[in-house]
Length: 98
Length: 318
Ligand code: SF4
Ligand code: SF4
Image (cartoon, each protein chain N blue to C red):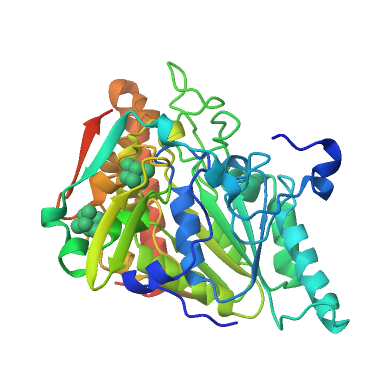
């Protein structure tokens, strides 16, 4: 927060949607989820996505590029809660100590 | 207007998320997942009015907001009143030609404290006036954000910092308010209970809530690792167990009269014992450690079973 008082939007409104991304929460993590692509259904055929749906921190990226499926963790924001690890139906995620 | 609801993974991936990363909800909190699922049901321009609560505090710590859609914070007690005002304001602005969209969906969100207790009066008023608002309560069973105080949504046997368990008390001694039924008694068009674990059911119900004319109410169970003293990775599992044990059965009520049991609850042959739900949570630990509370535990199970039988009767399920 570096604006002067007369640069702050009226009534303290925040006018940039989703600017919380400027604040990184990855440092909260004590355990890190690690993806194992070999068994993952998203990588295989672009289905499942359960980890992505449940992740409370939007820290999983499922990417479809040129008919290929990719998976990425965003460790800047992942808090290491382990929901993705617990819910993955094919055990394609493991947790490692930071 | 009228974007489709996204229930398949490919459609979900294409739909804009309404909450960003970088919010400061506790690790493993289910509330952001609930908001994410809610976003999947949206059909066009939407405004969210939110009462004080964990979700409000931790998603919008100044000067940041995790919300990507218009959002307004109001006090603990008046989310519904403000939502009514927003509906009226858009109506007038549209009439005066100051607003291009034909329609704006208005959603009010409150935690269980802001809904079952503090905001109940304004909620009831909004329902009575019939404003076209979807009210969603994310119910984590206590005032978690102020330090885990008991609320009207706290379960019997639950330990909070205002219902301590010990030699003389087994935690909260009273039953939970049946909020969905109380709301349904206002004879509003649509009431539904949801669990984030059952994501498809959640999104479809939320969409129905948006589509009906007049007020609609959604009651979502929202596991809270901090207050429930549960493992952060177990939140979705607990959301599932809440349904299986009958602690948070899934159903819909149309016009306050017609009860309909939803798939995940309808498929239950026999309720899972509440022990399975309680044991992973430290807030119920005393019920298993101290033999004098065994009777109370049985009492809770009896209450849950009775409520379940009654609900089945209302839904016409054998
Ligand atoms: S550990 Fe939790 S926050 Fe991290 S990616 Fe998995 S679900 Fe998301
Ligand atoms: S839940 Fe498991 S199988 Fe499914 S997409 Fe995620 S990592 Fe892959």
